[in-house]
Image (cartoon, rainbow, N blue to C red; front, side, top):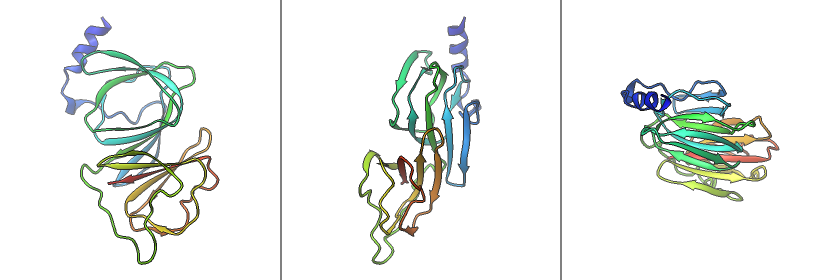
Length: 201
């Protein structure tokens, strides 16, 4: 019976489907005209069929398991490690079910702009941010993701791209918005154990 219900549900018009958030286990970290940022946990429950209306980028900060049901009704178990990153295009439609006792946890960044975010040139003699001391985790036409395993070095730099900075210490991630053209010497992340910079393109 569950299979029949799933197939019927997936026949619904995509435009009528709800977005993934808000939902139980998800907390909005901040929201502006450019992005929405969510702290998300996959609790032990099945979440409703939903469609992602925005391109999104994510970093998982606690491992966990879930079942993803595709538009064709295929159920696929997925185990995700901590510190994985991923990018998904808008329009992704599926059902998700958290299955591990300790839930998978992540920070989701929804990119509200469907097109380019733009960039700016370096401010005078100040060098542009280039990920010095970081590992590049992901790079495509929409976003570049940098990972720091310690607080970023405090060297004065300019941000050519609008950037979301995520600082993670335990189960309390923080997110900061950095407009393009910002010139500063630190990202405001304090002594966070891990820091991720998401440069939006």
